[in-house]
Image (cartoon, rainbow, N blue to C red; front, side):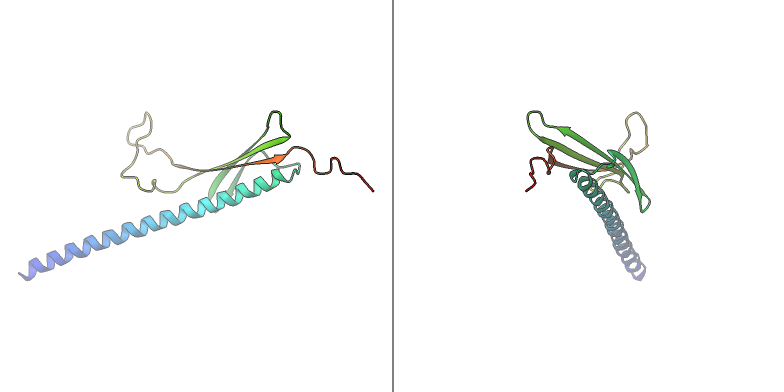
Length: 141
């Protein structure tokens, strides 16, 4: 009887340890995703500020490596027809770490058996700015 009790206790302990390990791994993946998203948001806001200020030398496409992750920034400026507005779009993409949250297994890549497709994180910001310079129409006293 003591042997059966020990086996049941070991099984319960094993299930508890597996659950705790899975919870820890999920927490680490979530923290990593949150860090990557925060870095991408900071990079996108910096690019947005650069373009909105009207400074020259703001790159439309660049790649930045932060804490071992490479972030790809792409900016687009388009004039709105009939208006003196420019639409600005900043897109940041990065390779995400770990499996997709909530995924039940590994997805198969198109045309490849057994190989998981890399998951990409993406952040897109949209804004508009006045295409007319601020100094236009200002008269001197």
